[in-house]
Length: 450
Image (cartoon, rainbow, N blue to C red; front, side):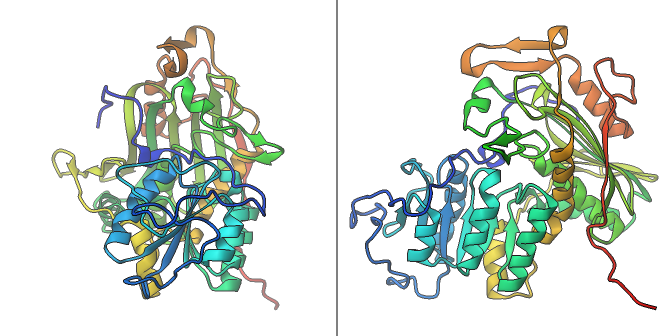
């Protein structure tokens, strides 16, 4: 699939969360007029967990209801209307933004503090769509209160946090689904089926390439935007960790199918670059060498030339497959032109199905994201990204709509993805040697005595 010219912004469903951090305990909820049709119930009024027509329906709360949270509201709304769930509460530090595609059902309560919501509403499921560095504390509170989770990506920011949350889930019997919605793609399933059945032969490489653009306004969207740390806490709002995390996770899912087991990175190499005064990468090439299976390369930028939505390229000794994961278009060896493979399973619906019947597997359980979190752990330890400027960078537009483009970056990234080489190995003049991390086993063998 070749690069296409066109708008260089992705759909809202691919954006990172855009809200502020929930306030400290004790902050009152935002009052609204109760009783008005289509108006949320004011905080402090009696909740109605089994209102007429809602008995037995899981109560769902959304923490982070603005920004990207509006996308979650558009998913929740039809499920509420169909009787699959009841939207019991919305939480945000700002007044709830109206969205004609996501009206707030009558009786939905509004809070500015998630702890107050948990205490008063006792939801069955909590959807967490807040800045990445707030995920663990909010998830901890929700799970302790007895809720299952739909947790936006990245779920947590290091392996230690991943292990803590996994331990808490095991101790409480709760479950967490992670918001890698592209894992529910029927096109991804068709690709992994082709891998498992040998249609590509022996797989020798897995890669992804994506070239997006982000304007100045993107980095002004929130205090944590473009930051490595905020108030001393890791944020990691870089291209690999946030907007293009789906591309990395798709590759890890394919690698899982190739190996027939969870992916364990043995070594992680990364070259990170930036074109703005930010603390994280907007252009990066990552290579993961698993303990078992072929290498994985992710070559991505938010300062691209022509638009590449996001391709997953799987190379085998019998052919190559390409999945354009945002559009579910798949090209298989001998299959002619790329075709759209319809059918995505929604993560929230899947979580509800799993709650009703634990025999239904989760699409994106927390455990499946362990390798992705290992990548974040490496990024957290890596040096600051290298600044690209001068004649390497073009500016287009003005004001908040200005975008910066790295000259020739699309060709560099495509070469990396198709050949499995880092820019520094390919002799790119602005490239620097990669930073390398050797990772401990994610799934250590049990100790034995002899």
